[in-house]
Image 1 (tube, rainbow, N blue to C red):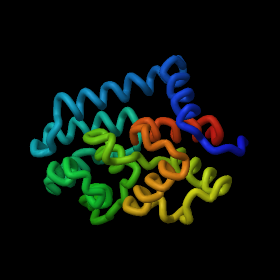
Image 2: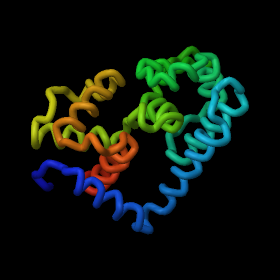
Image 3: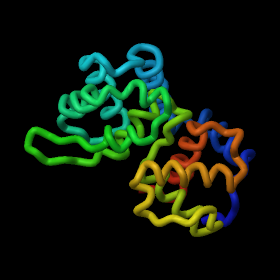
Image 4: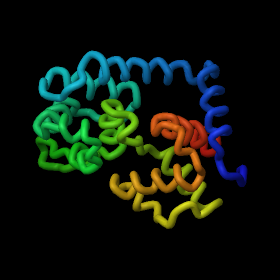
Length: 194
């Protein structure tokens, strides 16, 4: 594995390669679909039908394995999250993540929740997923950009702070959170293939 600090130039180079890479065409179309749905068609979360559509499409495109999409949509709708999303209140991610199902079981849909919030405001909510986790752990082991443990990545406040420190340490402040999300995901898929 490479032992280097990712620069803005390298990050932008990888994103340009991603734009041209046919292997990621399906992902790019999915991202465009989600952008259209969350940013153009159904911006708010005050209509349960619209929330359900967003949950179902996000679940399908990201393969998040949510089997009871109605319960998740109802949970999101009941939280009245629009003001928190617009303000960039990172606490909302953990609230959206903790869903009680009809069986009484409470599941933490953390990765899904970060994606749901991010698709409303991509430059306020970074996405957590297993590839991002692997890359943050990798860069920490290589360059010690910030002191944290793997478990800290599962707390959105801490995760957000870790992303902020990653951006500062590698001097990539001119890049958007969305660009950084895609970069970490791409590098994770490249360095840690399933």
